[in-house]
Length: 71
Image (tube, rainbow, N blue to C red):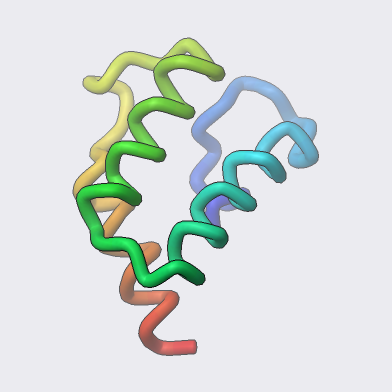
């Protein structure tokens, strides 16, 4: 799912593996949505240079949590 968001300009999907791994580890620890949201914001802004206005972290968090709860 994260790879389908097209959040970075790069076509190299392997750049998102670390980001996905951080989220999966957090989900596995049963951490709440606020922590997932902070991971999304810090990774996308800090590592990938996006601005918070470039993405909807709440929506992305909800998508992740819905996916996690369904699987």
